[in-house]
Each structure stands twice: as C-alpha cells, then as structure tokens.
Length: 158
Image (cartoon, rainbow, N blue to C red; front, side, top):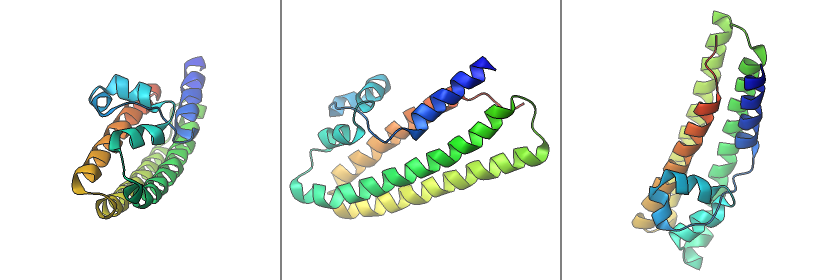
C-alpha cells in the first residue's frame, strides 16, 4: 500500500504540475537525462532557448504552444483521475471496470493526438519548416520522457 501511495504522489506531482521545465541548449535535447533535467525548471524557457525565435515567429508560435500545453494538462489530469481509481483500489478490478479504464485511456490519448495534429498545423504555418520540425521533435522527446516517468511509477492492475 505504501508503494502505491508513493506512486500516486509521484503521478500527481508529475502530471498536475504546470508545464514548466528548464533551460538548456539544442545539444541537450539529444541526451534524455539532460533533457529531463533541463525541462524541470522552465519548459517554455527551454523551448525558447532551443528554437531561438525571432519576435515575429514568437508572436505566431507561443499561442499555439500555450494551447497545446493546456490540452496536455487536461488530458494528464484525466489520466491521473483514472489512475487514482486504480491505485486507490489496491485489489483486483472487475472486467467491467477494466474496460472502463481502457476506454478512458484511449479517449485521453485520442484527445492528445487531436491536439498534436492541431499543433502541427499551427506550428507549420507559424515557423519556417526547419524550426517547426525542431520544435515538434523536441516536444516529442519531452513527451516520451514524461511517458516513461509516468509508466515507471504506475503498477499494473491486478
């Protein structure tokens, strides 16, 4: 039970925290440990330092970025609520409840995919293609690290 409480606290801290991470440079983005460390203090500042946007690019880019981060925060909260229900049980779940859990995860993943598609369209219009792809790669790496951290803390249902 203590292990589940610790996992629950980690999930809450990781997913409910605002999307703020640290500064670094483009070279750091290739080392996932360095990326994780750089992103923890201020994600937006880190993204800004990697992209080196002009004022005109920034004016178009940041609204798309902010909208995407809000959607990520919302989907993370939904996943968190689902996980809280599973961890809180600390016992085997019924087949019906397991199906509901799976459905909730799929809905959250679909919302994130839709938001990523919208982000792609907006970023490709806002930035030169090279900078747009650099950002999309960076966001993908950040999400992969977050997904790994999340998966590492969650126990499988019984």
